[in-house]
Image 1 (cartoon, helix red, strand yellow):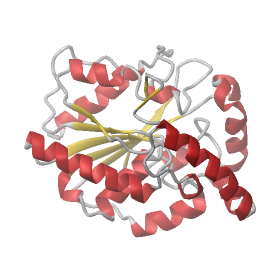
Image 2 (tube, one colour):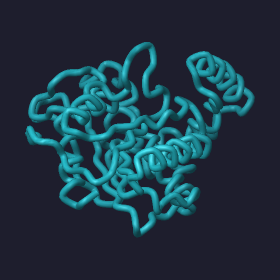
Image 3 (cartoon, one colour):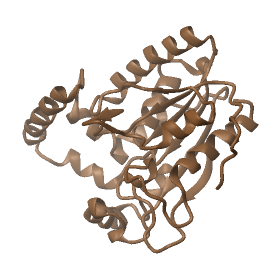
Length: 270
């Protein structure tokens, strides 16, 4: 998966939209690892979504709308390409469908986005409401300190469940003017990533193959381009697929994987 040494002739800028639980940059750490710099080396104009770590899908989509309108106004590009990880893909779909910004989006590429939700997350609806809200209050307080404007862990976390995503998909149909493509990541063994050991095992029982947070089947949306995993025994986790660990996996170079995505989009004149 070797990228070209030349600039990528993308027609439109790229907007990176992060997933839940983190911001574009937090504690001096870039959510996307080395990926943005490698994109810029290829002459790609890269922007960040600036969404909240634990905002609801609806609130984060409104943030994205303002960011995109500003990018288009400043660059005159007319449209943008969105590359989204995890829940960021749902926020982008809501932006396109419910906020009617489809005329401003050329393509949406989702990486490990739980489009069909996570069955294990259905348990959120069985936890006593007062307990869930009590815990959510302190999580919201913490993320408010970290920079979130409107953290809503109570709603935002529940929106990742299979139950919530089923309704989401009924009310946010794809727009024919936007090109949708998706990728899934997969851990081959539960010890592939120590941070996801128990989640991987839980999802294997409830959802099947997964990357520690997102089931493979749930990540499939639009033009499914395949599963990204290693040639070795370990596979790639939900964090690994966004270059969180800044390492080269056996058979997969994560920044080069993203470069290949943009190269493909350029062939479609996006």
